[in-house]
Image (cartoon, rainbow, N blue to C red; front, top):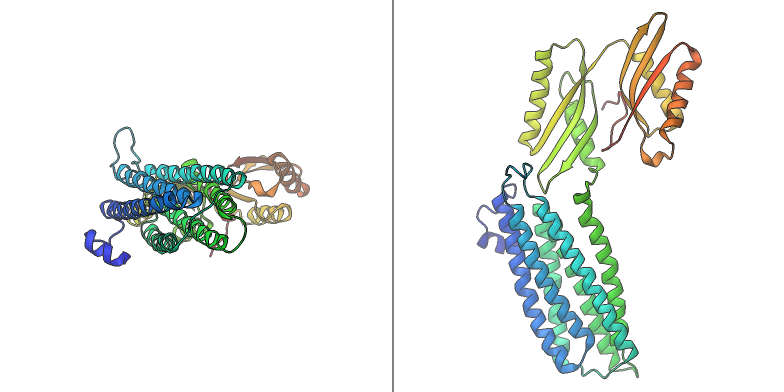
Length: 393
């Protein structure tokens, strides 16, 4: 069905890299979701009012909020489609992340309201008139929501949309909550007490738990989520594949919306390379990455040959302290009969060792064989998964 709708309503539907096609997918998903949820809301509201069921009425309000979420998602896609301007040179792609955050927040609000109403129903239970019509409406709702869950998930994956992933998770919650309501009302026909309020409360707790997870997921790109290890490794491997590149480090990636990422990295090249040669190499790497959708800015680091022993010595010291620590930009200068060793160091937070202690341990080990050595360490922040110094494929 998703494929049929895509072919009918989206021109050039296979080219999802185009902003216009991406927006068309988001618009189609939003409109389909709004239509389905409005119809389900009307049906459940009528059944809930006739049967006196709090859980069915709450489910109807939930569908109404889903329709509102569809409007918000649709607006998010529309705003995210705007081109960059003088005030927003990186575009407006984060509007879509903001829309996903609002959808997640609405899920939390619905969860709180459903919990409040369910507790009231537990305290003051009332009879519920449940029949084949009510059961049929709820069963139909489950089928529609199950289809919507898969529909949102497929399109969300196709266009890499956090908003549609949140909508898919919300539809999954609706399948579970409506199914729970159907089971509870059916069982209540055969037992001496009502499960309507109890089941509503359990469903509300599940919705709240899911909503908190979605809030965290929606906030991550807005706060500046670190790139995945897979993405960092892919970029590292591609950079190292170019002739003349000796190493890479200090990778930073900034996310300004789906398919709108900007990155920077340090690339190590031989100090014997001329400025023109270095510029040609760096410029070629940047152009190749831009063709694949990543705007990459590279800073070249000249590497002086003949420091392999120092490199190995530092690597052995780091390995004894914590293998997750990395170093780069090693430079060795002579000061009379002594030498100055200068390098940068990254200490990941998960190591649990403060920078001062790491610096003291490295300096002590380097000066053990030669007390005249001067050690200068600059500590960097690790913004992405950084390979060990000198590591090659």
